[in-house]
Length: 430
Ligand code: EPZ
Image (cartoon, rainbow, N blue to C red; front, side, top):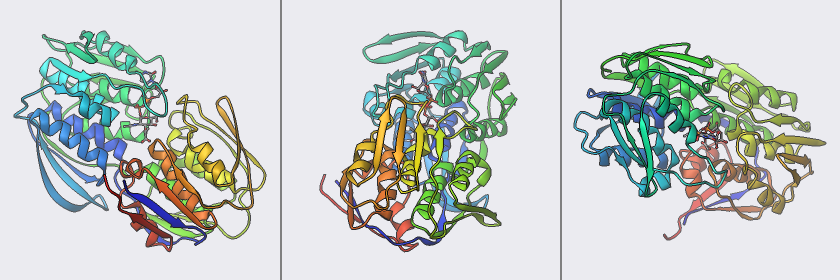
């Protein structure tokens, strides 16, 4: 298995291009199942999860033409043309769902357009139990018959789905996306209340509208969808990745650097920017993106609590803990979305951080320096926090289990090395 080796201490200077968002791209790819005309998606990142979704859709009979890389909406990214006209299977097998939970996003579109879907139940994952009960309950409200059998969700709607009033008891990003896609082809009106408002949900809604869907309330917590008989093909550029942007913002700040996040949009991570500014980091919007600068003065301790959008994102909690680890004074980071998202803590402690976890909160007492160590993490954002810690630590840090990073960060080591970081990937076996 590959490793990332970092010798910390170099301030980052330069430009980092920000990719299209993985978490927008995955539901957008699933949306291709809603039409028998081609969906052209541009600004897709080169990531393992995108390949897994392509594999899943390809096995179902979706043809995917890769159109190389193209400049679209000011971004450079991969282009896929997905054509689900020759669909031959409505099954998402265990082997792929186990690898990527977002495979569950094919459930709503398959059921809406084909009246049947067989999708492996995703198991628990490193950050929490992550059930899909809210997705299933909402589809039942829309008339689906659902059974769980041999580890699979067997869903049927032989006469199509019907509109209904879906009230999510908890805000769920994937649940909102699944039901939004399903509702576009349901009979009548679907109201989705307590809907997630993440930029990735909004991006999906805009793409669906350009495919002919009738959706009102985009960007609010109540989505009203008038079902249509058919969706058509469309072209859509994936929104920029706010979490990749936030992660490199922390990299610039924590190393005392000056980096332009090219193509970045400050409006997508206002909650993170507010906390970073409060900690003394200088963040400005520029024509080409967002510039993050931090002078030699100390970072001030801060508090942050994860919440659904527009609150502070859970996907930035681990990275911000690195900033807190080298800040002056104490910080508190509270995780309210997932029940087990502090796995990076013991690894950061091995690098010299002073962190105590009390229930859902981590108290971080800033230390003057971190020191390099062998570390590994069990999920994507935890792994990226270890890279950030390695950039600021004295000596050598070796981050193992790099495949987690490859799921969510395109060319991470190249982007950081281009800004002066001493970082390399060491290829391993297996
Ligand atoms: C999405 O996961 C993201 N993944 C996650 O990004 C992100 O952390 C999460 O939203 C929260 O922002 C993708 O978009 C592919 P949820 P999702 O449904 O949709 C509970 C990353 O690092 N819940 O909003 O699976 C659930 O257990 C990842 O890129 C139920 O109880 O998240 C969690 O506690 C990791 N029942 C909370 O709701 C359900 O049926 C929010 O989960 C569904 C969710």
